[in-house]
Image 1 (cartoon, rainbow, N blue to C red):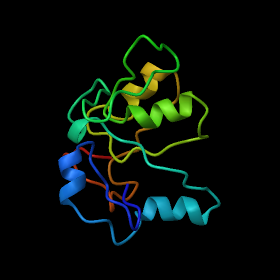
Image 2: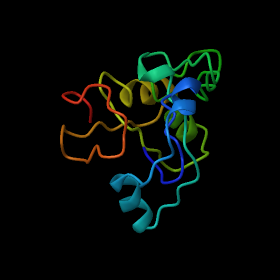
Image 3: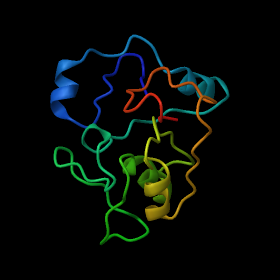
Length: 134
């Protein structure tokens, strides 16, 4: 999710280096903050959100709190790990195209919710597949 003043890095240092900081914050993040939530950080997806394993050779792989010897699963493993480790009460995942929310949630023993297509704004995310992203 875009946060004003920060580059959404898409899990790759070249992407981070070649893109400008966002000029606005995602409406989804704004709605949560305006409702009383506190944004304490951003996680890193696996490289370009292309893997189902949750591994990132550029930034390392987060440790699965439910099974430390196993992979955390899914492109958005960092978000699931943050919840499973009780670092945060909840986290947002920018997209769930082919399991980016559900797979790491299942691997890490937390609940992952994939909303119906089009219900939640995808403004301020990096799309992987605009016809499948939720």
